[in-house]
Image (tube, rainbow, N blue to C red; front, side, top):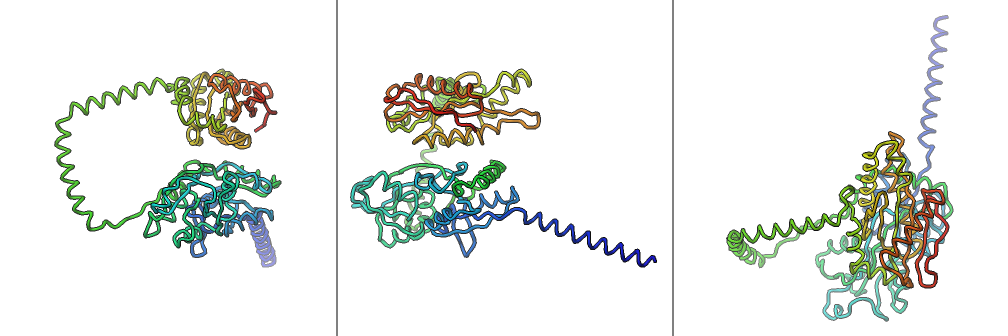
Length: 479
């Protein structure tokens, strides 16, 4: 009788164990794998080495997988093939690419990930270097299907492009003399060219543009879009900085030629003589130090004492700079006015010190994540003004949504129930704008911001300033 009870007990334990193991197995396979695609020859962003996916974007998506417990599988191919794969749809994400109108037809873009610059390189030859920039009839090497090819066809329709399957093939063609000019991402060219014996065979002559890389999903896949957005928000900023430091700070050891040693010796003797002379000029050094201190004090006059941002005087100085004048001339200036929602309630409920802390945290987040900003200025109370490069309304909307959805929430303090949101007036100053004084731009962006507040707060109101229509405001964009 006891033996029968023991057998029943053992069988029960086995059945229970099998049930638990099946539940665990089901839980482990609950999340479907996300396919991450990109180029196999886009160093240092994404590349394949001995069949293993590597690079900045690869490390980023591995981190995404680890933090969000979401399995990912990398499919690296020629660049154009990665775009074709996105058009076929499914549970697939493009690891990182630039926005373009042609790609917008079959892609939905997520948050901006990393900044990239693209430069025109030319063979280091005296004859070739005589022609600066891009001229009609010129042949320029590009990656087929890459944004560089689309950029040249749009901006320079009289230029001929020679397409290659990937960056490695393009660089190899340049080494073999098949192309004498090429349009390549600066970080990519630096990575490939430094691996060559003649690293100065090609030299940069003109930076063409600086843009952000975006993650993207197939158009219309709202469920995957929300999953990727939510997962990206979980990635700690310091981990992103670690990955950037790993891949975008490369070094190269160069053998010093024999003829350089006498030159080094002479330089050391000259340095010793200079050092003696500098000892006799101690008074001059102290005078220069005093001037530097005075310069620092002058800088304080342009800085907000609470947040460390520019104050209104600092904003005036930046607005008068040559860079801003060029942006105004090209119609590529965005003016954003941010106002913290219900700031008085925050002060009343949590105290003025907590209100100051919110402003400080918001200012730090804006400085950390808007490196492309020309100016970030606190111009009064809880209002912050930003001057940013923006090529068109889509660009302006992406930036404004990114600020509201990703940057501003970092000033919130969930532990005490303190949620921070902002109302944003975003103004695009196009080429036809006539009234482009700072006062006028602040007035119109401020008016847009108040319209956002009247529409319910925690949203963006977009507007455009032009001669055809002095001020044109769109419907609010909820975030």
